[in-house]
Length: 114
Length: 115
Image 1: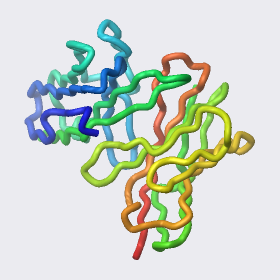
Image 2: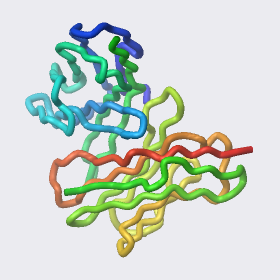
Image 3: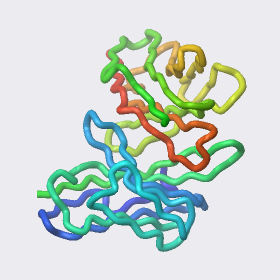
């Protein structure tokens, strides 16, 4: 979805380096999410934020941190990258309409840690 | 706790044949159910959702899904498969009584439509 953008799209880095993945959205949604995708494991939630002052850990937050700089921006950091953090990372956004919300995903960032 | 299972890692179907991708769920209350599709090198795209009402939900690209409360299932279907339907499909669930709990996704089912 072009309304949710992620930078960079691809990144190769070395063990121990600090990495930041950025997500921006123009959908006006309050809620933002970071997921990682690994083959055979599906999507796993790393962190989520329901508004600028709200940050919550997901299923696999160890080794990651996030920053919600504004309603439209949500960044994911790997303080000291390790090879098992090699994965496809997705940002998503949502807003409650009616009874629930529907998530919309960015195109993904492919991260390789050597 | 809420969970979702996609029992098949891979589904193969011939072009023009009907397709079914299976999903079962577990929630303590009433479910909100979703299907997403992921094409190669793309993010997930929303296909359809069940909130309440009619058990048969119609979505994008000719897909539909049937909510079956007694079997706790929400299988994705299409009457006639296209080669372009080949992709990775994810089912997701949220308990309607869970407040702000995020969606829980299944592990995905890879659909291959053979010409």
